[in-house]
Length: 144
Image (cartoon, rainbow, N blue to C red; front, side, top):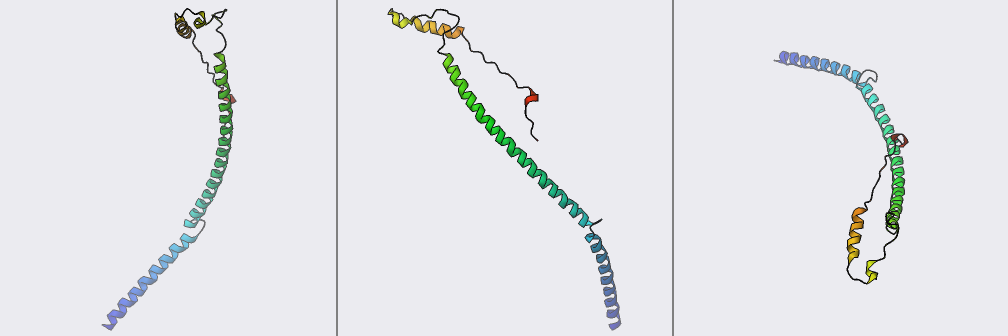
């Protein structure tokens, strides 16, 4: 019985030695920087650094574009307010189709109330036209 237990113990020790040898070889391959997992980790780390730099550069460009867009929006709002004032002042200018301005019918004293009909007819004859122009694409500023 003692002989059998010695044989099994030596076989287990031999199997453990072979397992340790194989594991040692695998660990050496894993730790090499040129061909193993360490090399892949080093490459991925360098790529992460490059992507971080590219992200910071893109963030800076986006912030610059946002600032210029904000200034253009403020300018556009100021121009829109000015245009609204100009359009509002255009209502005070007499109609060029009628060279002589008609006197107000309410001041005539006839009380017929024809002024409302004339005002409705003038509004139907006179229509506002809006013209929109597109800016050529070559003049637009490109983002980086």
